Image 1 (tube, rainbow, N blue to C red):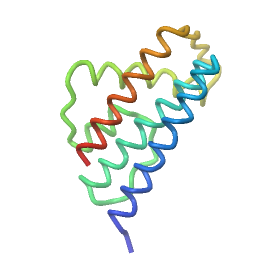
Image 2: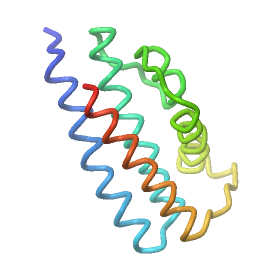
Image 3: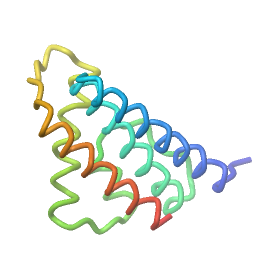
Length: 126
């Protein structure tokens, strides 16, 4: 039997664990890998919202915009921009022929903090 609360907790706890991994990687100078984990963080938080809204299993997709739309989340311009930015790093992690260049320490930290803020906002809305 499908348990909505259990599914939401699964995705939420995964997101909270992955934000720690992202921070470790970025602190160690592994910016592309850290941002790949930032993408996972938001993907998992959005899947929790999808489960809450649709009351069914989350789809097997990595498309953050699709997930946000299906979960009926209203995102402002800045939150939409972070989704778009993070999606290019999920591609690098899965499809290395895309050759995304490293953003450097300052940008990686900026993107990490934006991810963390978005995660906090998404969790607050669950």
